Amino acid sequence: MPPGALTEATLAEAARVLAERDADLARILHDLGPPPLWAREPGFPTLIHIILEQQVSLASARAAFVRLLAAASPLTPQRFLAFDDGTLKAIGFSRQKSAYSRHLAQALVQGTFDLDALHRLDDEPARAALLRLKGIGPWTADIYLLMALLRPDVWPSGDLALAVAVQRVKRLPHRPSSDELAVIGQGWQPWRAVAARMLWYYYLDGQND
Image 1: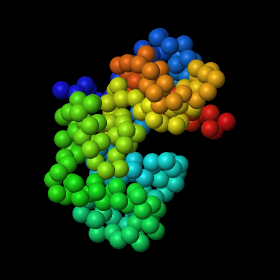
Image 2: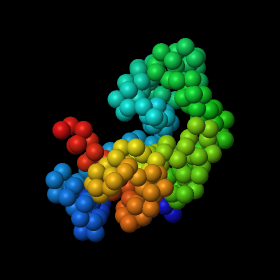
Image 3: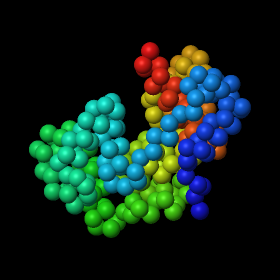
């Protein structure tokens, strides 16, 4: 069975454990306190929202998602499939993201993909199931596992903000690549998803300076 989902309590405790292990994370915890849980409701709407977030700002993705919910709420795969290309473009979907989202919706309607079953799987099988879908890459799969399923040890090594934060916190001469970030993250097991939240919290605080 997969490990227990993170809660506010286990997040705070894990942050303290990481701070005892890593002086750089200790500074973040001292300065900012425990990071938010940033939990998202598991399901089709959240995965569509994460697809919208691929390679764009969170603000623009959020704006498109709000427009989508205004057009179809509750958002279901069947309702999504009723939208034509023009409607999706007006909402904020690129041609590529429209195709990815339609593929996901069709897989759910046809029963070839069971999104609700992911919570019963361990991290790697759940990630593999997501990666089999067209348009769901490692980053999208990792963010869904981390924020929707609240897995404690998922490490989205392809995340740009995370790489920037690690470079700053660790005072590295260059921004770490995805492979380098994966190696760095090994030191924070089995709480890599908590370390990611701490580093995102630090990154966002820096953006507000």
